[in-house]
Structure formats: structure tokens, C-alpha cells
Length: 151
Length: 150
Image (cartoon, rainbow over all chains, first blue to last red; front, top):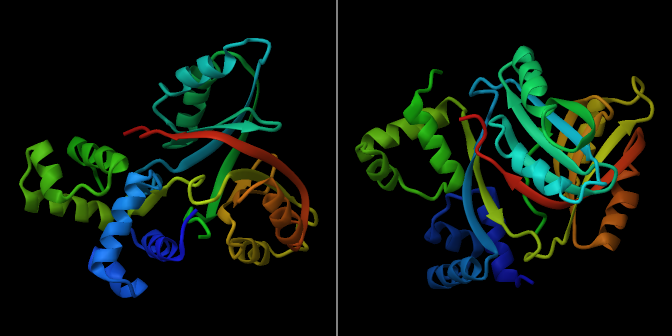
């Protein structure tokens, strides 16, 4: 578990990952040395995994975002592994999640437009192995997407 | 904005690790530091790079459970979508809110310390929202992000 210093540092970093060590020190009222040591320790312990950019797919020309909820044929022992291995090869897939519940796997896809979606769906998705059922949800708007953890 | 292959290569590299400096990236892609800096700035200014996100191990910071909720509004038309969106967005455990078309009206990503904590969030926060009808929960087991069509 995190102590209050680590929590304070991570809270600030979640708001702005580009903050430098001196900036973090000023905002958390800790010394520069202490912040640097805590950051090293958090990375070492595998708590802090890194930093990535967030791409706005619509700005890049991929205006259609679809979530496909897939139920697999579980009579096939290797259904999960084979489905996921094949789904990774579909370029338009940006996220693969597995679940416990009514849905087995969810694929998140980005496409340029609806004809592009239809093409990908017919040629790349319906050909994936062991699908029992698919439901599609189309994202109309993203209301909140910061993904920050309530530390 | 038009992007070329080099822009896409920069996006791919920063999707893996955004802590790389323009000079490090420039060396890898045979571009001067100022030229790389201008390219990244252009991608940021155009909104293609929407921001930066910290990657944390949710389990290790105490959030053992992530659940996706499909929420259907019970009284469509009578309930204000803005009210629902504002209230649900203010719940700290709710990480993402998407307005969707299909089986559900909204898709929420919710984190909790454990299943008991999730039950608390579900009952006290989510079910108490104005207009909430059917709710379907799926517990996240694994997750991977891919670089996408670039």
C-alpha cells in the first residue's frame, strides 16, 4: 500500500505526468531529494509503470469508434487464446479486454468511417475464431476519459 | 492536419514510452532535436496528441477490482442527460464515461478496492443516480492496449 507521501506525488503526476522533480517537490511540500527517491522506489517496485501519450483518434481521421462485445464458444478449450492471438493482428483494434460476466472479450476498434467499419467487420472480425455471439456498441461521445485512479 | 509516415512512427514510439525526449527520439529516427521537437509540437497543437497519461499498476496502489458497467436509463426523455453525465462524472471511482449507441446508453469503467468496495460504489453511488435503469456488470480480468492502425 502507498503511504501519504507516495500518494501525494502520484496524485500530482496523474494530473500532469510531465512535472519535473522540483515542480513535484514544490507541489507536495516534500524535499527534492525525497521526491526523487520516492519516484525511484515506485518505479523499482513496479507501481509506476511509465507514461504514454493519449491519441485523439478522431483528430487523426478515425472518426468511428466501436466496442465489440464478444461471447466465445467455450466448448473449445483454447477459444480465448486463439481468439485473442488472432484479434491482435487486426490493425484497427486498439484495446483487448477479457471479462468475468456475460461478456467474454471486448475489442475496441477505430475506423475512418462507416464503410471502413463495415469492411473491417466483414473481412477481419467475423473471420476471427470461436465467436459464439457479437454485440456492437458505437461510442457517441466520451464524457469522461481521464482514467485517473482515486488515490 | 496531414500526417506522414514519420509522424506515425513518432506516435507509435510515444505510445510505448512518452518519457523519451525529442533528442532521444531524434537520434533513433535520424532527425535533429529541433526538427523532432517541432514535429511533436505540431502533433500536440493539432490535438492528435491529446495528452499524456501516467501508467500505474492499479493492483499495487490498492485497486484490485475494475468493473465495466453498461447502464440503461429508465426514463429516457424525462431525465436530463446532462444531469446524469455531470453526476456520474463526479464519482471518483468512475474512470471513464462513454455515451454509446446500442444495448446500453452509457458505458462506465469503475475501479474499487475489492468486491465489497465495488458493491458500496454500485449501491450508494451508481444506483442512486437519477434515471438509472438496467445495469450490467462485467469484471475485468485482463487488458492490453495495442498501437492501433498507425
